[in-house]
Image 1 (cartoon, rainbow, N blue to C red):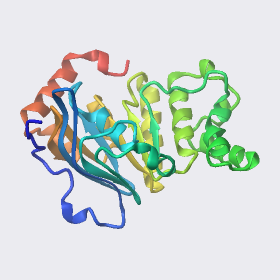
Image 2 (cartoon, one colour):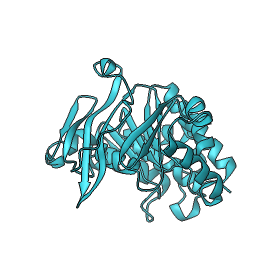
Image 3 (tube, rainbow, N blue to C red):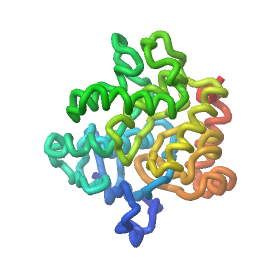
Image 4 (cartoon, helix red, strand yellow):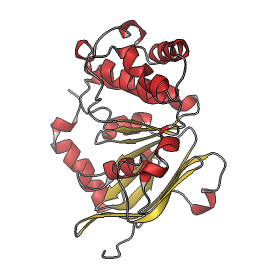
Length: 272
């Protein structure tokens, strides 16, 4: 590795030990071949925060989500989610079961099981992983679908759902195991403006209830409206961090300015 290091600490280390801190990553490095994807990333996220990771494609933001979820192994550093610690080059299988209880992930393409109804998708992990009674799992699933505004679509199959409805069912499925941390990869990528705002309201409500959310996004307007903090990455390094209004209105780093200019020039990333 070439020894590059993130130039901004996303959260002061003195707060890493706070009882309210749900996620901490220290010195996170990951390489694919000779290319360093993450270059010593540090971040900490407190309970109830909505953290947005932004950056051009290839900047490392989705890789961070995958590392936190235990889907990608990393080469140096460590990640703590609640009381579960993952260290560099450790086998995620050793902590995967505990991690499932603490991290929910919603992928850019929701990956609902096409042969199961919305409520059956939400019940799947509680019944088959947590071994909850089916009646309890169904009651919780209905509660989550109602909370996210899609209770009336409980019996619909994924192909019968709109993009926004499918996204919220996927969030309900991720929340069904009651994780303290929810990860969302480009949640607005396929949503029209109305569905985008509905999703944002759901995210805001979840945060107000004490959920911690980390999302990747190219949508700077969505980040301004619904995130509490933003981190900008470039070439695997944290280059800028702070409140969205301040960072996105007055960017200090060339990579942030390039990102915002690219978004303005690329309407494909905007909801239509």
